[in-house]
Image (cartoon, rainbow, N blue to C red; front, side):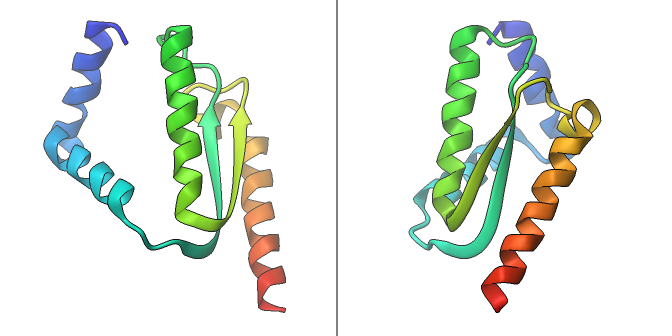
Length: 109
């Protein structure tokens, strides 16, 4: 990612915590060996304008890695969305929520 974007990305953690805490949280998730048994859907933005093709491919790979935390996981690429999928493609979010509810309900039967 361009240096300007990396700086802006790291600055957001002043509000949300700090970059080191964020990275620690990510490392904790990666190291966990507990596999959840919950319905999980990962929505990924497919149109990050400031990403190079290589950065977008890496982002997609990282998003797919999140699927491993649950035994019931799905991946949805919001092809026409940037970071704010709920704004760019709200119908994708609504469909994903409905699917998670349906899968969760079916599991209880």
